[in-house]
Image 1 (cartoon, helix red, strand yellow):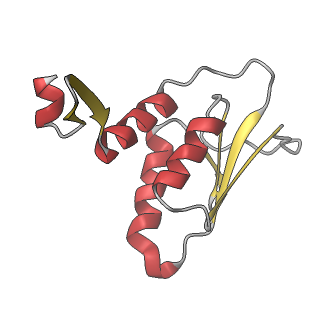
Image 2 (cartoon, rainbow, N blue to C red):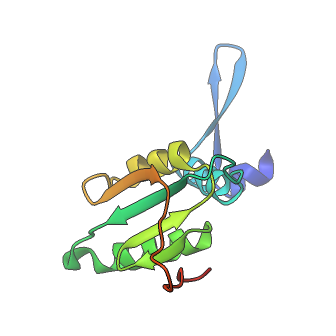
Length: 123
């Protein structure tokens, strides 16, 4: 617990005689990243697809978002469209909410149909 407190992942507070440990915002974000990285592969054949349009004025955020998608296992389909076969819809929605990016990001689930002869990027 001391290590987690030093990393500012948890905070300690007292409620009466009880000691309560809670995740900090940093801890909650790190937990969401871990949930996304370690999510189980879907067995129903569906993909989680993320489509985003982060404005040029938020270029740094857009680049960080792209790196994050790659880090947690999404594959690049085409410009600002990424997909994964992991079951990440719920933790990803929470991640978007935590980062206040809901206005720029859409999450859908579905099957990817690749036209004959065309390769799936990063396959």
